[in-house]
Length: 341
Ligand code: 1OR
Ligand code: 1OR
Image: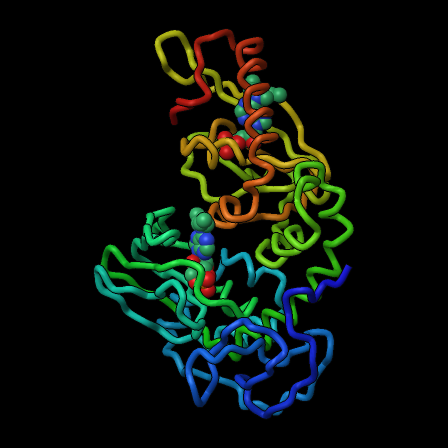
């Protein structure tokens, strides 16, 4: 399967990143005119093209660099970058302060930057059939604005700051040069594995590849706690290697949580966990611990909602099974829809 299905793979025909190729109808920004009906910049992530473009560098103080590193440490699409790539990304990033009600991104616009959140709340609006709906929110962490840059599409959502906020921007040229190249590598690395993951079976191959584009790989050592019962949830996990132990604290009749954790199940290669809190919008119902070395593929809640719709029926059916087993294990005193802290 072509792993570059969403990318233009024609050769570079201009010294500029933004140029016109009339082979497709996707509108992209052009240096000289806005929104022409054209396709992607030529960019072949497989080719180690000569890097003639000057590097983008926004000088930073030590204090800014520290804040930037902190904001970027959990950004999933940065996880598989090597050190040189990551340092080029960090060099190119620039600070942007925003005010309440400011539109950071407007749906339908051309993509200029990718943003990492340092702080602030941001609502996500998606307009369909002339109706704009709030479909989610970023709460002091995460990132947005990758889709228009990855796939040369108009912005898919509007992002509005609802508080004062601080963002780190990454320009389109640097994003495409580094992240697209890394994504091509990721697609090759994970293609066979994601095809073997049972929950992803109902997706089209191209949809599975879009998952690969936005996932990050995280590594854990024996005993590491991956998820803590009662925490707020923002990620979904698929076990790539090793074993994950799911442990649950029961509640007593008076509603108090006992200190005793009970092992309820284990997840192995190809299995998923961490979906329940995302589906129910509740705190984590159980804790998850690494048993020896564990590698997981991690997806943020926005990608989960955007990409895993076709798998939702199966997940919900499995959640019904949790509820049955819960009753068998702990009696009926506990409610998965109200796991408490
Ligand atoms: P972008 O470059 O298209 C808008 O600019 C950004 O909003 C987009 O990249 C994503 O980073 C972010 N659907 C599409 N884009 C979303 C969504 C989303 N959520 C965040 N973004 N959905 C909402 C999922 C909670 C699906 C709505 C049907
Ligand atoms: P989460 O987001 O709540 C903890 O974070 C995860 O543990 C949860 O999503 C599930 O993915 C996973 N009950 C609740 N959570 C479970 C269960 C479960 N099994 C796995 N998880 N069971 C019933 C409890 C007795 C199933 C037992 C086989």
